[in-house]
Length: 355
Image (cartoon, rainbow, N blue to C red; front, side, top):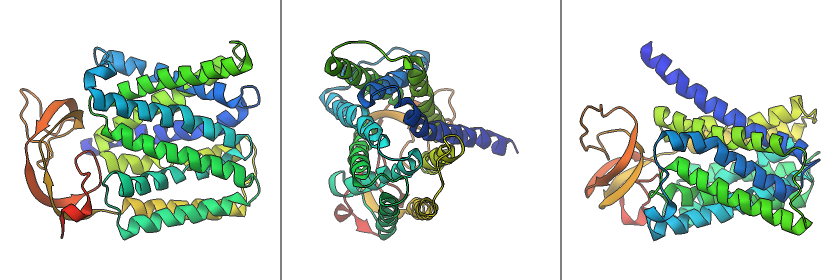
């Protein structure tokens, strides 16, 4: 019973994280009536930085990006430009043409972009199930293009481009090991948010902020800053796979709020697309593969437990089952177990022996 109660709080953290993130799309649709897209993108990401700032402060001194080395700086720059500047701007531009419900569902294309980019560019293995899941999501997205509230081809192209940007962002962020995840979000929010805000002001010819500025910042704090913090909390307690499964409900929360709060119509096309996307996600998360693979020497920092496979270093006064984060080193090893592409498993399938 104690284990169930302990797990429940992490499940709740994951669900709240997904709800807050999903709510950002319909709320942003409303804010776009008073704020132009680039200005809103800047305010949302500055809000994200404000939201994660307490976590960064609580965990100690801020680690400047250049302390992580040249690799960390380049990866962080890529994440900032693609995930912090372009991604949200493209999303908000699409929201001006299409209903929030359809855009919410289209955001599932982010996982398609992530897995395909991972397969071709980031040495991640994608099985037949993964391709089926990606194909199902693409078909569902196509169903929305011509449907009521879909807005046609323009918002679809904008969302596809935005999801590709976020796909790269996901891989860049996953590879950053020179600074903690919360600080990655902090720097992304500060730099990308400031860039979009001041670029918007330069184009407008003035630095006048809209009346809804504090509402936009609050949405950023809740839907990006606190949402990300809760997601990391869930991942620490449930593991990456289960926490990502819970977080994948975010677009469906966005659709629900679009219908119940904004009063958008729920079409048969959206129902079919939502069902197909949900099935595709279930197929994706059922994917695992196993083969003999080798790990070289690696030094990095991330949240981990001592699982008997990759983390076996000792701590004074700390149980191995407790989630914790610190700089640590892996020794070379070779083994065979079921795994997902993650921080420790970014090998090309051709380099290994399939079991």
